[in-house]
Image (cartoon, rainbow, N blue to C red; front, side, top):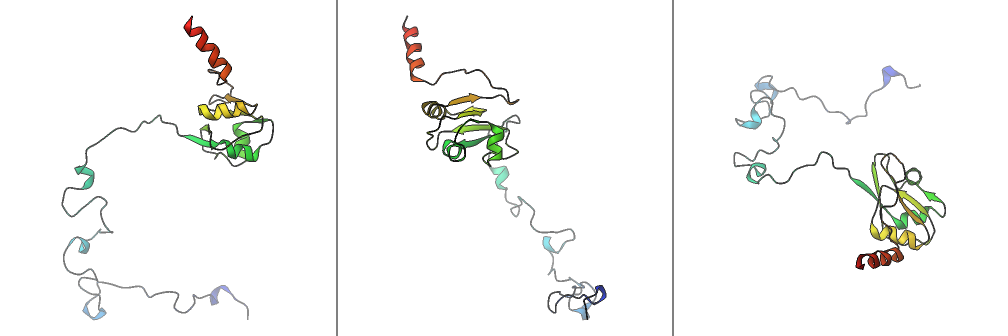
Length: 176
């Protein structure tokens, strides 16, 4: 005989009988209905501990002073290390969309910062919102480019050159 809807039943022991409380002394759960005698836990509307209540003593939240503030405009930068980029890309331009497709950057990440953990030996052009100084230096030492892009995706002009030759040239002009 096949299984039909009217023959479906839970396995024996899988369900428990509902506890009917407060229905007289003969039920075994009358009067206080399994809540014991007086107190906060015996009252109606009590559903577990009240968060932050410490039995009447001054709670921790009020004992400690207020400190600092939360910046509503803070944007968390998602970090991507050079070794992860080098492992997934061998040539060409690596932009933020390519990093997303490779699984390096989550969809919700607004700002991407490239950090210098690991080594890179391929001449890649990497586009990101931010670079650490050492990451930009490693990319350029490998023959690649570290291009900073705006939040709208446009490539910004280089604000500083990390190569050693330009650093020496700037020092010479400072002495004049």
